[in-house]
Amino acid sequence: MASYQTPRGTQDILPSDSRKWLEVEELIRSVCYYYGYDEIRTPVFEDTKVFKRENDSSDMVNKEMYTFSINNEDSLTLRPEGTAGVIRSFVQHKMYGIMEMPAKLYYMGEMFRYERPQKGRYRQFNQFGIENIGVKSPLVDAEVIALGYSILKALGLSQIKVVLNTLGDDESRANYRAKLKEHFAPCLDELCADCKRRYEQNPLRLLDCKVDKDHPSMMSAPKMEDSLNEESKAYFNEVLKALDALEIPYEIDDRLVRGLDYYTHTVFEVVSTHPESGSQATVFAGGRYDGLVEYFGGPQMSGVGFAMGMERLMILAEAEGIALGQREGIDVYVMGLGNVGTVPLEIATACRANGFVSEFNITPRGLKAQFKSVDRKQAKFAVIVGETELEQHMCNVKHIASQKQVSCDIDDVVDTIELLMKEGE
Image (cartoon, rainbow, N blue to C red; front, side, top):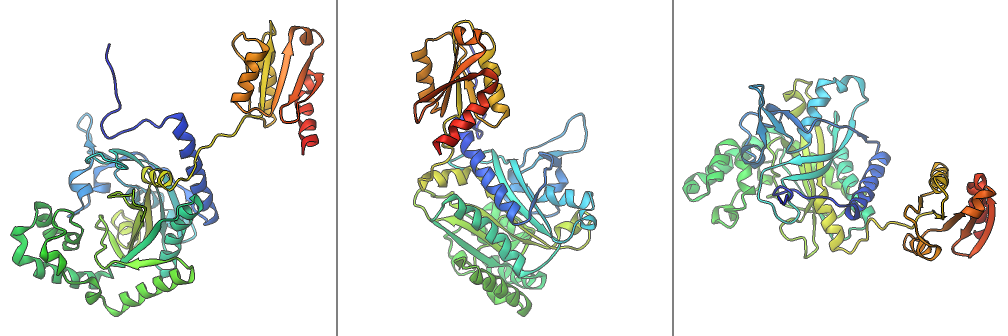
């Protein structure tokens, strides 16, 4: 008999874990609600050109995308990240003309990248992300960071830090690219193949290389801050002032460039400092982008956002000892003794309709065995109906905590439970 397993780089999220996911997702949605963000849902695959833009140097685009075509139709790609699809949708539906700016959107769902699976890194993985589109302001940059930081704090993570940098405006980046190309030209043959490609496409990405990170040329590379014009310096200083005002601690890392090519001005990462985080320490990361809306055919309009890896978030919560998905006991367990037909199901259904989490006994069992189920499920009330009670259309309702038991008409079970609850308060 064949034995089937999950494909490499994927996972099953079993019921005991799905409760944890639901708890975290509900927390995220609540924080987004208080910050005024609305959910947007886009397809899990898009036209390949949505992600593979001209001269993109990122590893995601060049190495990791799942791309396919069917019946000689246009090339399609499973989404490797969320921002591009959100901006495509923003432009396609002309949301810039019907929403008050900034448009505040969030997404949550599966992404796909072909890369080496390891702890916290899957080929099918889940991301939450936000996009704030339409207003270019240091205050917006700070608010976006604050939203993600608030989620982590609300979850209970304590061992985290904010790391940020600025890539400046177009003029600043052009100056920096020229300096980097001049710096790395003499030693380019000593660097990896990816660095050679990045040298031509986007020299800033050389600083993000994991293979040559200890090469002497990396250690002595020019700093971005020396290429910033006054406008870019002023913008970044305002971001820092806003974070200070919000009492969000941060570090500045002048080598932080992020993995995607569309970022401008502020870029940031929030990382775990927990010793078990290892190489997967980044919890969420993002930055400002100025050209994406225009690339997809919309007006010239800036945006800023981040993406948060849900799998990493769950791993870090566990590492910090945060208890998630602790299922509480049920409200009502309906016990049927003898031939009582569908009555236990009817009572449980009526209880559910009135807001009580309810279950009922299905298999023929005695009273003692059914009370064991009451204990295992930590039920607050037991409703007992037997053949004798049924003849009189009656049942017994027992409040487990007080051990008080009363008889009532089957139609009055809900009222009786509510009365016993009030007495127990």
